[in-house]
Amino acid sequence: MKEVIRTEILADLKAVIEFFTTKQGNPEKLQKISNHAIDDVALHKDLDVISITVLIYSIYKMLPQLRKEEKVGELVKALQIAQQGLEQKVFRKYNKSIKVAFKIIHDLAGEVKVHLQDVMQAARIKKGSILLQKGLSIGQAAGLMGLSNWDLQSYASKRVQLGEHTESYPAIRRMKKAFSLFNVQ
Image 1: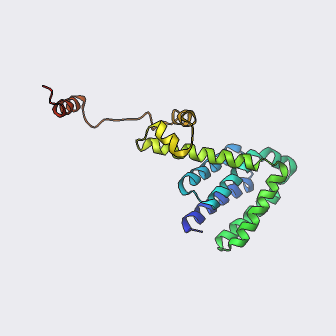
Image 2 (image 1 turned 30 degrees about the vertical axis):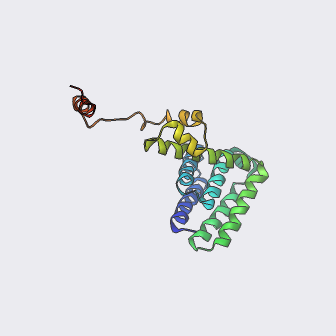
C-alpha cells in the first residue's frame, strides 16, 4: 500500500472513530467524512480507498439502524483494530478488521453493493466536474467518466466554480485581436 493512501485511509478511520467516541451524534459530520472519502476515490482510484469509502458511506447510510441494533460498540472496536493495523503497517490485521466491519454492516442490511454503486457514481461525477474545470465540455467529460450528460450537468450546475469567470483582457483588446486575426479593418 502506498504511503499516501495509507495516510488518507488512516485520517478517514480516525475521523469515523472520533465521530462515534465523542458522542456528537450529528449525522452531517459523518456525511462530510463520507464525501471527503469519495474525493479520495476520485483522486487515487485505489481498491483500498474504494473499500474504506464504501464502508464509511455504508455506515453513514446505516447509522440509525446501527444505533437501534446497538452495534456501534462492535463497529468502533473493529475500526480501532483496523487503525492499529494501519499504523503498525500490519495489513493482515487491517484487512481482517475491515472485513469484520463490513460483516456488521451487511448483517444489518445487505445494501453494501448498492452503496458501492452510489460511491462509484459519486466519484465519477466529482471527477467529471474536475474535467469541466480543466476546460472540457460537459459531453466530453461525461463520456470520459462513463456518465450521462444529465448526471454531470445536475452536479456541475450546483458548483460555484463553474459560474465564476474573470477576464484578464478587456473587451476592446479582445476585439482588436480578433479583427487583426481575420484582417478586418
